[in-house]
Image 1 (cartoon, rainbow, N blue to C red):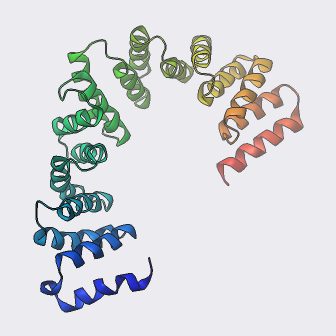
Image 2: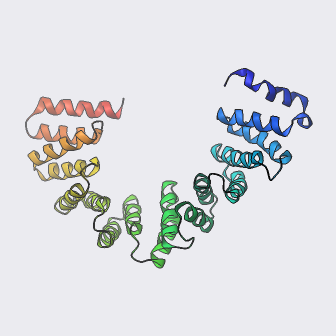
Image 3: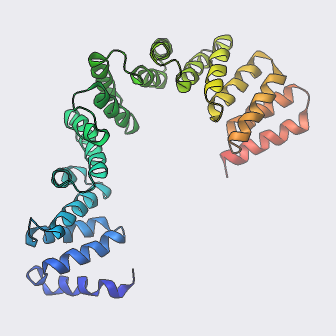
Length: 296
């Protein structure tokens, strides 16, 4: 955006609030929004919405842009009422409900968050699915305790809902509660036996207890179900290495590196494997590459 496009905005500011027309305020706010100057855009949009007809398209756009400007500038509490208005108008409903649901999480309104995500995904507001979706977004935003409550509610409504025990397992691994993680992930697999990530995380849990013989078959199952994700390849390579199966470790780690060539952990474990196998120079190269990837 060139400087000349902001001249009307600067003139309006110099002339005082009373001299700004609804159209000028709206257009200047739009220019600021496109420049990602969200705080300044919100200030101008606050003027625009007081002057625009509530039945007009310009007002609906101003409401949406004001909600997004507050949200994107980190002023989540201020964003909530405008997101609610935007949601009521039906403009960009999926995007608005996504922001609104996340804003409700950040302002500790889990019931309303579940309602927003229910609309976003087209499910009932108090369904197990709505609470599961809410928990997923809570985990992303590191509201773990709130997520556990939502997952408990989801399982109360539907004890067989896929995904809930998996998330509880992930949360348990994060807290280093491996016994609970193993239990939750086994429950998930009983409900959802085709879920590769559940086997991967179960294998991960066993590696944290250095139970390599229990980790290996679960990591293999994860790979058989989804051969396109590098995570279980790398953990399986580590398990083989720790158990002394150097040939298997090398083979599976090289397959993992095909999927994720810049994975520093895979290079490190492969380097250690090659060193232990007596291939010192090649091993050193892998270890050097691991360091380069960690400190680019």
